[in-house]
Amino acid sequence: MSIKRVLLAGLALSACASFAQAADEVNIYSYRQEFLIKPLLETFTAETGIKTNVIFSKSGLLERLQHEGANSPADVILTSDIGPLHDAVERNLVAPIESQVVKDNVPEHYRSKDDLWVGLTARSRVIYASRERVKPGEIQTYEDLADPKWKGRICTRSGKHSYNLSLIGSIIEHDGEEQAEQWLRAVKENLARRPQGNDRAQVKAIKEGQCDLALGNTYYFGHMLTNEEEPEQQEWARSVNIVFPNQEGRGAHMSISGAALAKHAPNRDAAIKLIEFLTSEKAQKMYAEVNYEFPVRPGIEWSPLLKEYMGDFKADKVNLGDVVKHRAAASRLVDRVGFDN
Image 1 (spheres, rainbow, N blue to C red):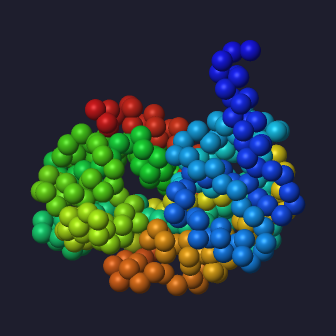
Image 2 (image 1 turned 90 degrees about the horizontal axis):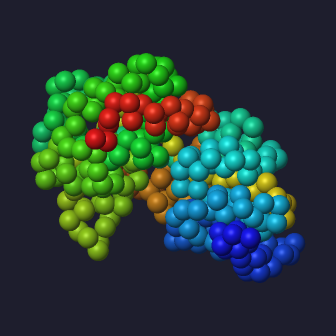
């Protein structure tokens, strides 16, 4: 047996050992950070008596699940983005979430058409615009980013990042691959610098005058504006306006954090109860507020910060399953136009 196989076998055994099987527990593999979900899991246990066991990791959980196979102790997979949910489906690592409660709680555009995943929180991929150098209404759509007037004025992270692949995938879904390529090529021509850094780094670049526009997820604005440990980030946030694109058309692109039921879940009933809880009114409000995200369940009050700085906006209601299927094509377009070069 190879060293790699021995190590993988050891991982599976250690997971099984740490997750003692019982009827009143649920085992979670989570890409979401502990501080985001711990209060939710504590509330779930208090209300149901079902214990939660969690393994947190920024990467590698799907690979671990795949190698554990039918012996995996995992019941629920929690992700911070639509990408890993799609990958889990592609690798045949998940089972249908058979719950009318979940279907009633979450709109269909935030659910897999085959019930193989469900969104738990939503965020929009918006345009951050300099308050000083971009007039209100001067940019209104994603398509506007391709206008030559913005040459040398746009910043973004890598085109290969999951957030941007999702946006490009949405453009492919709405306009076709040929138009998406033309758009991406034109946006590249308008970049102020080579794609780099994370979404916060783009807002910092606007503050410092390196660019005037940037793509970013909405929740980063909340994290910057409330950052007491690094108060300079508050100044970054105050230097920009948030533009929700395509309000006269399809609406702003949305993505999700989400959950899936592991294919070989040993505690299936408890796992479904957890997913149902995460889509409940109480959990939706808690989960969305802690990361400045939007609840996926309609009728849940937004956090005060979101209401103050973002207000009502039109969200794209295309099913995210139809968007995420274009990830591979989006990645090829990024390479084809040399976006990150």
